[in-house]
Image (cartoon, protein in one colour):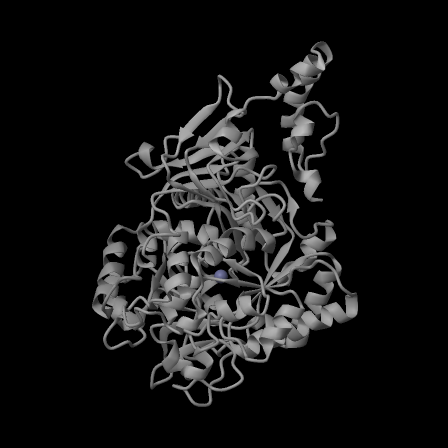
Length: 601
Ligand SMILES: [Zn+2]
């Protein structure tokens, strides 16, 4: 398999056969192999070296960290069309230079494989870029003021949504209520989300639009928060948010295309060259896919996407025969996102023992797990259809139940290269690390959450459980593969913040300068590996990308500072200077426009 995907020199020098994995590459390859064949026919053997096509791009004088253990460092890399053809010393790569080769002198800067965000919600992220910013509001008054300002410029019939508020940054850290925002918003419906996506606050106009009253019962897997008189406060937890979703007008395709382009420009500027787009429970993933597919057709996808629609709809992909990682190098499907439970922040993560600060409450299983046997059945059928399972599980019992289901699948269907995933894998039960490893489950984790939740997690779950929280080191020690991402827009998309978080575990409140549960810290190399090769493996693409290796797609970044040698605290300030996807520059910090987007190469 590995050889098949490489672009070996022997092929370039005239061997007849090359089986490249996707049609686009085959077409590309034919374009140069055809004239080449003629040249070979005419010239004697001694001249064959000259017939090697020149690279389209060479990056030289660089400090390349390849993420390829067979060849960990290099000075230069050559790219032909969308693939890397040579990695080595400046001298090694020089032979690929031709008169048309674009040569970039990296001037000793660090070059890394492009970052592959293993878990994000890409269009929600784009939406967030456009939405009212509530996350850094430092008080309930500031939160309300910002919503009021947005209401003034919001057209009739439009909603105020998203926002990412976080009441833990306020004093007192109390959940907001509709009374706080009603006077400032009047008829404009508001449903702003908590940063973890597991709770939202509605104003009275939105509650009216959704028909939610004191008489409305809590749906399974959700809670409508109520005041002393039983009236809704406006805060809706987990599945109760679906009551509101039904009233919110769907985004049009035009809006989705616009948001996707904004998000793509943002990703390029941060060096994110691949993104694994997870269903976020709103059943809009197919509509997002439609937008991505249009952009791919127009050649406007500047990042590679692997899309995981909801497991509830597993039959859609199964019935057309789509299997794991099906598609082109830019857009693939074949994965399914499921939910076992909620979040720690909303106290809906599902634990064996109650929350320390809320006796009697162990969290909630998700709506998809009502009852759990229904989820188990879905998983068995989806696995039989060859689809990849990516399951959100945060509390220790939530994770444990999903591992039970994965065990059942292996028992019933036998061994296979399935690459089960648990998304977040946040609070592990001590006994479950071994099972995780034995089943080959990938821990798809978002290190930024550790420095964010780390501010208050221990109060909620106590020290013992906290010691197995975002347990990067324990996972690696058990031989579990990590795949890193962000959960954007829950956390910022910037991979440097993820590396910083994994390496320092210094919580955002500045209270754990030496790291919260410091025994779980990673080295910079381990963190970069998880964010590149680890993520590529999690989407069955480790032969195609994830490292700077001859034959792989030329997805790379040049960064401002050497993350391996600077003070780890400074990693969060490192900037991406250039981003390459398939050898094309999609971000160049020297070519900024006023909008912060690139003018193109
Ligand atoms: Zn997510």
